[in-house]
Each structure stands twice: as C-alpha cells, then as structure tokens.
Length: 167
Image (cartoon, rainbow, N blue to C red; front, side, top):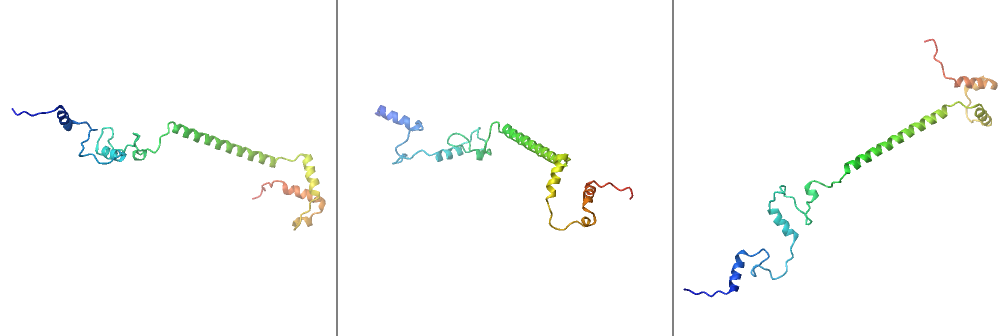
C-alpha cells in the first residue's frame, strides 16, 4: 500500500478550502492593505438580488428604510388630513365672523347717518353754521329769494321728490 502520511493539520486545511465560511479568506486573494467595507459595494450586491418583498427594486438606505423620493412618497403625516380640514374649517369660521362684523358695522353706520336729529342736536348744528361762510359762487336761487325764505327753500330741496301724476 502506498502509505501516505497525513497529519491532522493537513486534513483540517483540506476541509476548510472547499467549504469554508464567508469570513474565511485565502491568502492569495487577500490584499496587502486594509480595505474598509463600503455601503456602495453592498448596494451593488443588493441590486443584483431579487427579493419577493422588493418587486420594484427600491434602493434601501443604510438604515434599512426605502428612499422616500424613489418610492414616490415625500412625507406622510398621521392625522394630517384631519388637522388640515380643521384648519380650513377654522379659517372659514373666522372669515364668516369677519364678514358678519363688517356687515353689522355698515348697517349701524348707515342707521346713524339716516337717524333724525334730536331738537337739541339740530339747534347745535344751526348755532355752529351761523358762523360759517363759504367762499366761492353762490347758487342762482340765492339772489332771487330773500334771506328769511332760505330755510323754506332748503327744506323743499331736502324733501324727497314725489313722482308727478302726469306722464
């Protein structure tokens, strides 16, 4: 028989060469300097693989999440629709309240302007107007009517015009 001497160390090395783990390296393939593990290398390996979970070949980030821009989702706010709807409803309520306040202010102003003067206030206005003189042209009718009749003429001008019976 051909006797072949095999030592236990030779058997271990032969067993490791064919079925070694991924972390085992042969000395011929190992570089002479340190090469850090890169995320880029992992991405290239992931692109070649097809997983049932990744039918669309999304690029995973290093933290395990899918890049939201590539996935087509920019952001997702839980309860964002309710908050947005509440903001719109609140804005609508504010707008309606503002419109109501504006309408009420216009009505109040109009009623003040159209309110008749009390006799006391009318007397105050007359007293104040006695000292006022207007510069400029006098109306045509002012020369034709004596001063004591001006009040009657002004009251007639102030009255609303009635529609005439003749057409």
